[in-house]
Image (cartoon, rainbow, N blue to C red; front, side):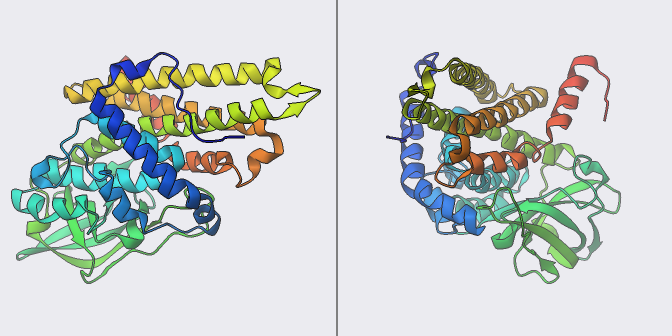
Length: 390
């Protein structure tokens, strides 16, 4: 049986894409199928991040694709970025996380809030993967409530002295720089570029994860770290700055989740046509057809949702609440499809021979990070009612 990927497009959404969009999607798909799919199950079983993929991700253009060419990016639009995230997450959420963090949480804030010197110094090297970054917002006691952060810095001549810690940080164990959010003496939140090698800066790795096992996760520890004031992002301060970064990442996740759902639907459909029980393929059974029909329906709805959101982002019209709706809906949709696909495969669904159980475990992180399922509901509720329920 051929389990190669066939992309569902029930509503001919490809007609809405440009030739460039399709070319970018196809090249990313081919790379992911050739370079990631053959090794990812073994990496997940071993709990190892395939670091050699960093340079390949850079070559395929996955680091800051919408960053202007002047700074090393490709100057692509937001739908191109979304399609790339879809194809990378189709093979693994952890590998997509690496690209998302580099693009939306490291390159994006330097591009949007950085000085010209900071942009020219860091962005081209981040685009090529010569240096890797991470994003420090979440703390051990402050996840959904980042405004309560305790990480702080105090002025000392031409430098600041940074103290605090961050937790659940993708890419931190190998990151060369960290875009860290901390409070100044006036309790105002600022972004700082903390560089590997600065005294008192350590990045212990988080082990024993059941989710995102092929992704590197860790902490950021700041023990009187001396950071030059020239490393503070000057363009924007306050909590709105990191939340703008999260909007960009959440948008990419809305596309990435579609990739997971597509992969599991494709696997379940092909397996159901091959698996014979009671004298006929289980695809001929009503309950299996119900599962598959509902999967295709939800994927199609999500495709249209993210496409329209991409159009709004291209016009700089997408609101945080609109992005929250898509992130929450599409990840929840993918999580439900993964569970149904696992049932269609029966016992085979729990083995590493298929991607489904790995996707299922990965989505338990995706449904929580970049804003939990419940927090996104409340963001939308606030938008609808005008009442903040946080």
